[in-house]
Every structure is written in structure tokens, then in C-alpha cells.
Length: 272
Ligand code: AMP
Ligand code: FE
Ligand code: FE
Ligand code: ZN
Image (tube, rainbow, N blue to C red; front, side, top):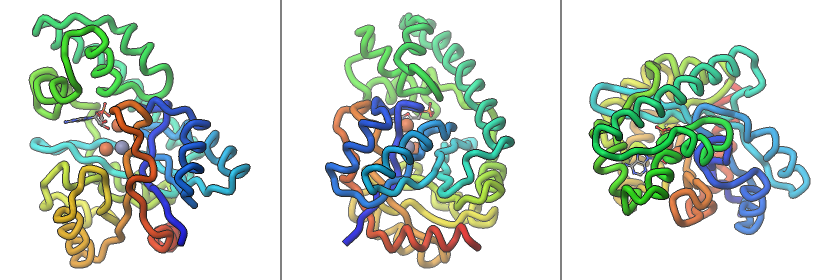
């Protein structure tokens, strides 16, 4: 039986893992395929494909985009995109630049709460690619200002919390169209975290093709619920661990895996 983990980050966004580390871990877990889905960057795909070729592991291109509703943050996965497209790279670059401004804004807000972190510390932790809240969270932990990731997100950086700053404005419709335009398959990521199913129906109207049913933060009941919803809306099902290396503690790669059949369905959808 062949298995795939279709939600993996690299150090080009907020994982601690290099492409080498990602691919070694995928090999250790005997995965046949993985999808690299970094936040707003595709820089990890090329290096992982290259290593995957030598190991006989298929690397599927992906990206994770963030869009917002007034009361929810929605993550859209774009699988099988033609990541080398110039217009796509330009668009991602502008989103990445917006992320840098956003860090400065969140640092200003944190300072009003008595938490002083140097921007350079956050950018050092990020190292390259897309900078984000997980890097800022790590800088906050390192400074001793907070005791846990949980505290960081519950008090300060979680959606709508005291020091949260949204990304540059990016409409759900726009994100879905961008993925389709790039030849990819748009899938809503970890809807069990968002808990706003009404938006999935709206997204389906814009061309959403699938639901990430299997995810680290989905329990058995959540999985059953989204299997049903995918069936009733005629959407594909995907799944992945959302591994951030050691970025959130435990290395998750391969702990959520799906039969390779579902990858075949995804490929059929991309061909349509
Ligand atoms: P960003 O792309 O900068 O908005 O950061 C998103 C990342 O922050 C997610 O991929 C998670 O790794 C992390 N994150 C966001 N909200 C939470 C939360 N409530 N608890 C733990 N991690 C979170
Ligand atoms: Fe992340
Ligand atoms: Fe996500
Ligand atoms: Zn993710």
C-alpha cells in the first residue's frame, strides 16, 4: 500500500526542517509521496523534488495561502500548481513583503503589552522565505516573555487576539482563482480549526475542489464530519500532518497519511 502526506512545510516558511531533513524524514516514514505546502512560497519545492528523485519519493507541488473573513482565517492549499510561473512568483513575492510589514506591526502591538522583541531576532529565526507568526512566537519564547506557544496564540497572536495583525487583503475568491489559474487544485486546509462550514459552501462556489479531511488537529468525529461534507458537496478529500519540523515540538510528518488513491484523484482534477 502506498501512502502520502500532503501537507508539509520547510524552512522556506515556518518549519525548522531543510529540504534534506524533510526528505530524510519522509523516507524514514516510508511515504511514497509528500506535498510541500509552504505559506506563500514555493521555494522549497525544487530542492525537495531533486532529493525526492534520488530517493524515489514523489514530491507534489503545493502552497498554503491565507485569506480572511471578518470572523475567520481560512487557509487554502493549492496542489499541483505550476510553481515556476512568473506572475505567480511575483504575486507570492508581494505577499511575502506584506508579511515583513506585518511582523513590524505585531511587534509594535506587543510593545504596548510590555513585550519587547527585536525585529532582527524574528528575521534571524525565520532565516529565509516567508516570515510569520510561528517565527515571532519562537522569538517571544526565547525572550522569556511567554512560557508556551499556547500562551502566545491565546493571549497575543491567535486570530483576533490582542496583537494579531492580518495579512495583506486577499479575498478567498482571488486565492482560489489564483490556484486554478496556475493549473492547481484548490483545497480548504484544516477546516476543523476554523469551524465555519458555511464558508466551505461559499468557497465551493468560487471553484474550491477539495477539503483537507485528514489533519493533525482533526479528531475522529471531525474526520467523519468532513468526509460527509465532502461527499455531499462533491469535493475531493486530502490529508496531511501539517508538519513544521521541530517548530511546534513534535515532528509530525507521516503521522497523518492518506492512501495514494486520493493523490490520483487530485491529479485527475488538475488535468480537468
Ligand atoms: P501566519 O502564516 O504568519 O499567519 O502563521 C500561521 C501559523 O501560525 C500556522 O501555520 C500555525 O503554525 C501558527 N498558528 C496560528 N494560530 C495558531 C494557534 N492558535 N495555535 C498554534 N499555532 C498557531
Ligand atoms: Fe505554518
Ligand atoms: Fe494552515
Ligand atoms: Zn500548514
